[in-house]
Length: 89
Image (cartoon, rainbow, N blue to C red):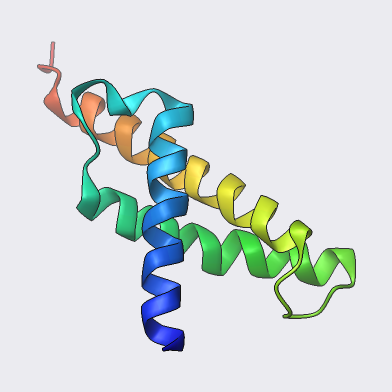
């Protein structure tokens, strides 16, 4: 059950990050949502939770860190895709 919860939470956080970044104009890229959500949750949520002194329990600081981490991953991915898609002068 924990794995299913982590996957669903990652998808939700990744979708929210795409909405905030503005990438959801053509719909949600669920692969990116999963990767950004799980990666951002792991790194951002863990770092913010530990800095706030909450430990590894599910707290608001961890949720905010998860969303911030997913936003960073989504923004970097969008930047990378536009950079690699533009022609070289």
